[in-house]
Image 1 (spheres, rainbow, N blue to C red):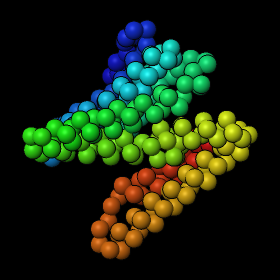
Image 2: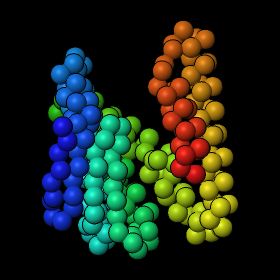
Image 3: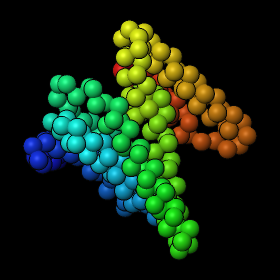
Image 4: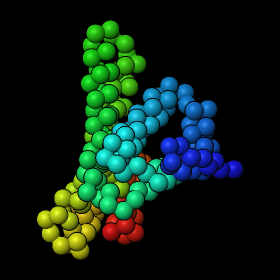
Length: 198
C-alpha cells in the first residue's frame, strides 16, 4: 500500500516499504535514539525544501523510499543547486549548536545525544561524494570551472577514493576485532553510485 497526496502543489509519494521501515525502526528501537535520528533527518530535508521554495524552485514531486528522499524540480533550478544542497546540513549544524547550548545550560543528556546526531548527519552529508550534499556542491562547482565530462570523471575518482578508504578502514577495524559493517556498506554504496550515477 502506498500513499499519494498533494501539498502546496507538490505531489508527495510515500512508498509502503518506506512506511514499513520507519515503523519497524520505531517498534524495535531499544536505544531511544531512532526518534531523534528521524527528527534530524526530517529537519535536514526540511532545510532543502525551504531553500527550494524560497529560491522559487518548489519541488514538483517528493518521493519517500527506503534510504532516500527523491526530489524532482523544474527546469532552471540548477543555478540554485548549491544553495539548496547546503541548506540541509546548515539546519543540522544550527540544531547542533542549539541543542549543545541547551545541554551546557541545563545538563540534559538527551540534548547532548540529539546535538551529536545532528552534527554527524550534517557533517556526513558534506562529504564530497555523489549522492550527498557535498558531492552536489562539488560537482556544480566543477561543472562551472571545467568541461562536464571532466567534472564527472573527477567525481568518479573522488567517489572511488572514498570507497577504498572506507573499505580499508573497515578491514583494519575487523583485524583489530572491532568489525563495523557500516564502512563496507558505505564503500559499496559509493562504488555503485560511481557506476550508475556518473
